[in-house]
Picture 1 (spheres, helix red, strand yellow):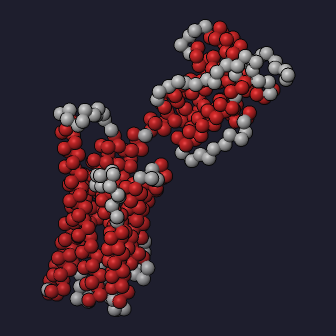
Picture 2 (tube, one colour):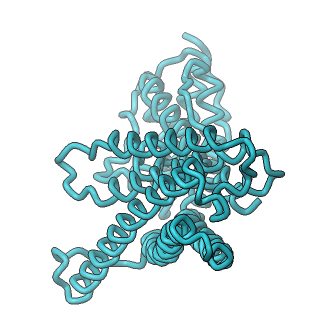
Length: 389
C-alpha cells in the first residue's frame, strides 16, 4: 500500500513537471518498483507473476540508471544522453531470465527458482546469475554516481559558504535539501542492496560448486533476503523524500495561487459574461486556472479600449481621495464603466487611455492586476444610465 501511495504521488506530481526528463524516469522507477512489490505480496503464480515481478524490478533499475545519467548530465548545451543502450541491456537480461525461467524442468518448484536449492540446474543457475549479475553491475554504477552527486553538492556548499559561488545569493531550499538527503539515503540503500546481491551472487556459485554446503547457502539466502528487503525500504524512503519535500515547499505557492484565483473571480466573471468568446484551454492545476483567468481578463481589458471614459476616471479619482489604493480604485471603476458602456454599445466620447501596470517585472504586473480585481469587487455599479446614440 505504501509503495502504491508513493507511486501515485510521483505520478500526480509528474503532471506538474511533465517536461522534466529526470523526473519522468524517477516516476517510472517508482511505479515499476511499486508494481513489483505488489506482485511479490500476491499468492505465488510461477507461470506469470514471478517472471513479471523480475521484469518490473529490472525495469526499475534501468529507469534508476537513466535518472542518474540525466541528473549528472551537466552540460546544458550538449545533447541529452542517449539511453537506448541502457534499455537494450535491461531488455536482454529480461529476455535471458524469462527464457531460463521458461526452460527450467517442470519438476522444479518455480517459486523457489531464485534460491540456492536448484543451483545445480543450468536453467535455474542462469536465471539467478543473469539477473543478479545485472543488479550488481547496475547498483555499483549507481553507488558511484550517488557519491559523485554528494561530493559535488558538498563542494557547492563550501563555495557558497565562503562566498565563492559566483556571488550568487543562497537561501534555504527545502526541495533541494530533500533531494540531497534522499540521494544520500538512496546511496546507502544501494550500498546495502549491492552488498546483498554480491553475497547472493557468490552464494549461488557456492551452491553450484559445493552441493555439500547447501544448508549453509540456504541459511545465507535468508540473511541476504532480509538485507535486500531493508534496502528496498530505504530505497523507497529515499525516492519519496525529494517528492515530499518539493510538495511541502510548494504549499505556500499553492495557497498564494488559490488566493489569487479567488480574488480574480469577480472581475473574470464580469468580463467573460460580456465577452463569452474569451476562452482559453487550461490545465487542471491551480496555476493553470489562475493563468487562464489572467489571460482572459487582459484580453478583455484590450477589447474595452474604445469604452474607457475619462469622465468616469475623473469622478472615481475624486471619490478615492488620493489614498494608497486610489489608483486601483480608479482603474476598477474605469473597467466597470467600460463594461456597462460596451453592453450598451456606447463608446466613450472622451476616451481614457488603456489602463496598464507599466511594470518592468511580471510579478509586479500580476500584483497590479490583483489589486485591480480586489478593488473591482468593492466598486459599485455606475448609477448613471447610458443611452445608445
